[in-house]
Amino acid sequence: MDDVNHWVLCPRCRAVLYGRRLVRAARVCPECGRHEALDAPERLRQLLDEGTIEPLDLPVRTADPLGFVDTRPYPERLREARERTGLDEAVVCVRGAVEGHPVIVAAMDFRFLGGSLGSAVGELITLSAETALAERTPLLIVTASGGARMQEGMFALLQMARTSQALSRLDEAGVLTLSLVTDPTFGGVAASFATSCDVILAEPGARLGFAGPRVIAQTLRQTLPAGFQTAEFLLRKGFVDVIRPRSALRPTLARLLAAAPAPDLEPARTPGEASAADPALTCAALLPERDPWEVVRLARRIERPTTLDYLGLILTDFEELHGDRASGDCPAIVAGLGQLDGQPVAVIGHQKGHEVAELATRNYGMASPAGYRKAARVLRLAAKLRVPVITLIDTPGAYPGIEAEEGGQAVAIAEILKLLAGLPVPVIAVVTGEGGSGGALALAVADEVLMFANAVYSVITPEGCAAILWKDPAAAPRAAAALRVDARQLLDLGLIDGVLPEPEDGAAADPVATADTLRRGLLARLPRLLALDPARLVADRRAKFRRMGAESAPATLGGTR
Image (cartoon, rainbow, N blue to C red; front, side):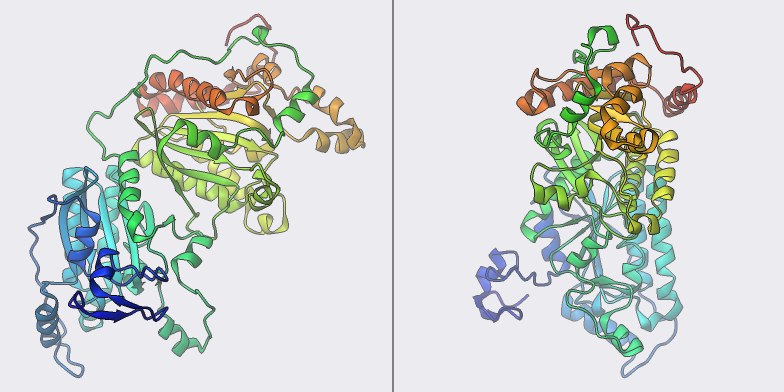
């Protein structure tokens, strides 16, 4: 880019900027935040550690299979693009590192024939994926494209299938794939490798779509709404995981790479603190007898730590992922990747809040179908990367609204139950507050199910049970007692595996100590589960739930589970 020593005008806010200042800001307007396009070499320098960029020795052979001529012959357009950009094709492929984490990168360059996807670009993306597969190294694809290269006809279109096939092999091998969507990304690129990676990141304002706005306007004569096809629009619709300004991309990528390392032949089987003392009580007789209704009230206290509170206290490098890639992003479910004492983990949990506004925004922790589909997507990612799963449960139940039923709430819950039953990685579930109905169980098909001492877990809320069976909502205390919703009685019945103690005045009295109890409880169980091969892990989990109800006699309070 040749504007370094000149004054430039921001197209959005019309601010006059000195070129060097714009370059120092990574070509982001310091006045309005507009992200100017980067060419591929500049993009690689911005993302990768200095001194680590090593071009991949890949052949570049761009052919003219159709002998295509529009106003000019295709070979002439290619020659001009090469002379103007200094590139052989519309993608640059390198090996490098992000904050020390190795990665293979294929970065597209819109300057080269609009970043169009032709046979050579498809071959280079495929070869980059095959290099990542051979080296067991994560793959990052940076997209910037107008779509398939029309001058190559069907040869260009078929690159969508070719590159998708290459990514599917990385899925089978358990190699992490990341996509960074930059402006613009349309057509065949958007409908293949840009949106089929494990995690989709986007720059602010980046546009992504199958049909470009000009095509939509000319074909259907539709007026597009403001913000249509932008990253922000797509985040709300559930198609993008993370939006980050350019200055935050490197640390975000580093967290994702650290939390989901490339697979080894013999993965690590124990977290950093394998000898953690287990704080969980497994004998019901050691727990005080409580009034179940009082426990219900304690479980619902707005001051109790939430999933995000716990994650901030027990995890490092947590990166939240968004969206179900189908319909939306449910704020009542938080999901992502992080590290627990050096052990990469996937975490999924219900999120309520401490303030009225957040409670409303999070729908009081009642997840929609999009929330359970988001959870299922992260579960599949955990299985691919072979990292254990932690679920934190705090919900009155799944959202019962009309739109949830229209969105397939029952189907979404049924699918996640089946997925968890056969997930080939360890799963530990912790009921941190309310464990209500199928909305809670959807995250609780686990190898180990723990509860905090002031949590509850039930087929229905006491109020709902009282209204149906007693015909009187005021009978909720009686219903709570009859349902045996508290941790002591559930442990006695053999329905949970342990109870995590809380401070005398409840978890809210000392969130830090409570979070430490949670951390130690998880660390005490992970080593045994990580030591099991996937087939044994799944067989044991299935056998555990096979017994539920078949062995329904209450345990003796003096017994140990």
